[in-house]
Image (tube, rainbow, N blue to C red):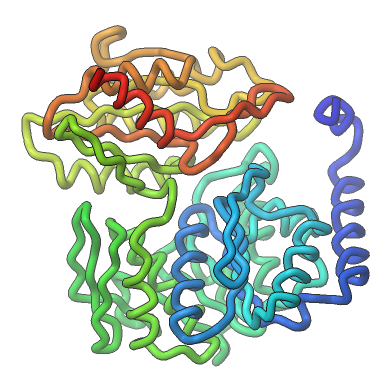
Length: 418
């Protein structure tokens, strides 16, 4: 019913209501954002991981930290799952979270900030000490319509932030650069950056790199995670944390749930869960796994696409995955109100070089799709299950069905063992 009624209200009216809620809630909770040093992180990919890394660095520096991301909320070490399916909460809930952080004695807050929240005014009355951008690639064009509109929404985070951290390796970073002294840039390829990572080594087990003669060990794989680490180092540097402290904080992050999340198994195979829902994220993920593959092992992909979202990216995602994976199993993700079969049809338009029922399968039931993938796995193979990450529900119409990819994989593995 809520979905049906919302279609009759122009977005500008919804945005006015969102912004009003945020402003009134800030007043009601006695302006908690003013009592915290707030770091906001935006970008298409890598936001959640970057936030986790920043929080770990700040805690290593002795700060009491509040953290709000797509996957979790944490206040002074007390953690709970974000089951809302929103990257950034409503204005009221976010202001209440900040009030709880202040009451708990937190001095710093790290917030994952979505383009929707910025456009809608859900983060009004929050002054950011530091704004961080990880990257901007195709996503949410169903809402923003154009990449220019999408990037403008992201840039709003920087308009009132005192300091900024920008990835020089992203597309057109100048869009987010101010050219002042309160700006940190980072890169894995441009040595003109304030934070330039060199002497890079990376594998599926983790990465290492050097910044300004300080060595960093990152227990997360891929150059994309080195970029996330550099963003975190930049944010920490902007609030006065040393590189040596940042290195210790980064090394303590052993896992970000649902992000290249390895599932131990008795099959002698590699099984990874990842949230990747954009073409850019899929390309980086599959390139990493492909680079580590040893013949004659196979890569098996299980994925879908979210309903009621940017339909134009679906064939692009299909093309990317089919260029790397040996076997593809298309399945349900979060169809919401859209026909699941149509979603798979649109992904399949981009897939080539695969034969139906041999190297390409369509299994709408996500559990059955996982069961099929596990049955095809052999020692040395790699299974990548993307699209859900650490989420706890599956959205079908108005329903939010209990669901967690890791739990289902583990359950199906136990069945295989008898």
